[in-house]
Image (tube, rainbow, N blue to C red; front, side):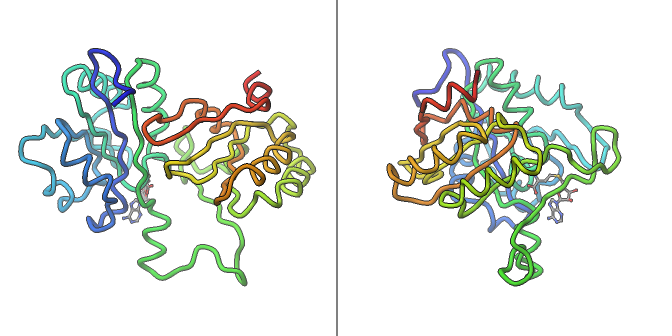
Length: 261
Ligand code: SAH
């Protein structure tokens, strides 16, 4: 692949879903079958581990309810060593790798060490558990937004987030109202925003902008693209400046420069 860094292997951060092996994605299955080494968390079920190829090395990083068998810095170092030794390294995480579980920190670390990294989403616990229990997380009559919280803060206690990431589905045509409302709620003009059109498809386009510039970008996207769009508001969207060139196109509009500056 074109993103391979000389002398280093590549890492796939893979979401294993909530437990039922049938909820693994086809892409996750393919990457697992090609893996030289898999570093996995305690949430990974035995059924999923049983599906790994015999030849692949397994490393249990074992984090569960504060009983860490490896610290996060140890996990980072293990990922780095694995990438220097093997060509295809899988970091297998419960649910979705970017929904809590510190996938973002692992990505940051790997980028810092110029390790080509890919992310394969998984079904997060909220979606998996809700489906299993037949709870519609949104319903036109009962709830038009979903807030996902971590029960633990860095201090180990629950704390209401002051800078949650906000995701707007069906928001492109309403971008003016969304920006207006968020500004009225006290959000800063220059809050970073990402807009993703045709996500995960070959014609995916990812834009970075700011809250105040969002309506204009949304308008131009509506003219330029024919496909679904998702708006993500919050500091985490700064990560989107780096895209997986295997499957994505990363567009730079004038507003990118403003967002980065
Ligand atoms: N990345 C994971 C979440 C990691 S945090 C995801 O996207 O789902 C770990 C927490 O996720 C657990 O403490 C629990 O609250 C929740 N969780 C994960 N799998 C679950 C399951 N099968 N059933 C219920 N809760 C689950």
